[in-house]
Length: 122
Image (cartoon, rainbow, N blue to C red):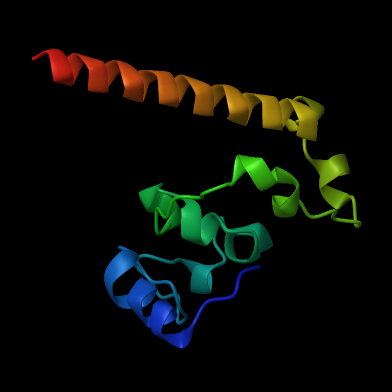
């Protein structure tokens, strides 16, 4: 879940999301009152906010994760229903995810520095 102000909800609904953020989820954008091909994770898990697939009616917001405080972004989910329903190859251990995020950050910083050096020589 997430917590945001009433003003920010209004901003998301009117300016940010190309489709609806708040109910009613009506046709032709949302079929079957927003339930067609959308499960609980679409609404409660963030797909509605972060997806950029027009068919998912997502808002295309970007996630920002502070890698210096990475553990504060983690929540232990005790139901374990996804561990049984998601294929094993899609599961990623936290240390591997952190390593992947750190590698992406390192590569982005190197690319930024390369571009800045290139721009300063022109």
